[in-house]
Image 1 (cartoon, helix red, strand yellow):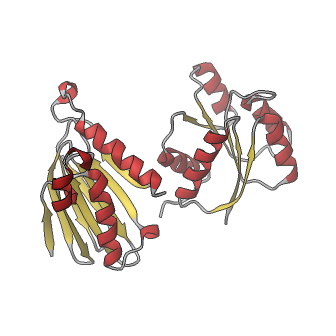
Image 2 (tube, chains in turn blue, brown):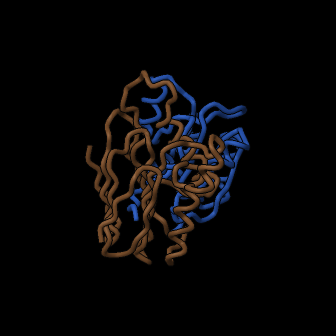
Length: 127
Length: 150
């Protein structure tokens, strides 16, 4: 099984760091896609079959929370595992995201944290 | 065979060997294991950067994290291990004297390790670092199992 991933973050540097962490992780990585905001992310989701979405919260045009809401309304994308990577500190917002089934990683993150969170949320075994 | 690694040193071995190191305080203990070739090694590095004493680093690279880690990788690949298969575990990097320690050697050892690993695109499988404990590591090269006591 290989995992097709979408990374949504308005910073290209952050997307590159997340992508490098994924490549380092030893997880079975398939196709990787990137988007700069929630709107672009939803467009990519319409065109490709994805197994995992990694999304930031604070982005222009459409933020991560709105994107997650749209994903949850669509039966095709409702069940895709979501990992939120953000600097967001508000507990109410984090609780809301957790209720929607998303896992959360705080920035700054370690590549190990990304690997372990994905292993956890996708029920993957460690080697 | 049982090998004991002293401060500023390293040992590599194969299936059947056990590598032990004692009194990991601020020092970094890095265990690397290739489960296919069943070879591995343990580095006990004392200080973060070799630029603080390049001469010493030339005679004994294992004293420093930035010179010891590449040496550990080289020795293991020399025994038939492959970098892409290595499972890495870290221990130590503590603050045995508590928050009063001025130089934060343990934390700096850990950050230099993470920098080197990021540059080399390798991740730690697990870690037991920080705190105030002095740790002892037993590393079994038949299984790759690491036991840490403090």
